[in-house]
Length: 122
Image (tube, rainbow, N blue to C red; front, side, top):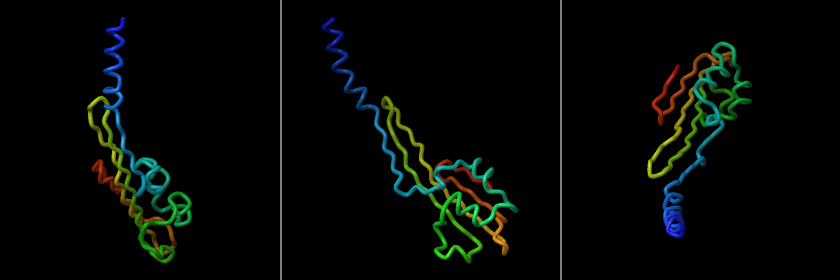
């Protein structure tokens, strides 16, 4: 029994050290909370207003004077890397959402890109 106990004591730290995760959300915004499908469900072209977008995503990254602008850009970056049992993985998000509004303040177009996963829809 003592031999098995020694093996467990010696291998357990190795296995535990093989599981590490680095999660950096310092540049993540409200956009990070939504997937591409939920954005498409919540932001409806021809229906959603600037006010509804502000309530959902907050103020855009650009332009600074967004009240009078017809194009808003939201950006969010989350870096999520790790190692589980010596197998590395990346689950990064690098999202860019560009919204265009008509003169009435209603959403007229939407362009979403997740650079990390290479997903894009318009």
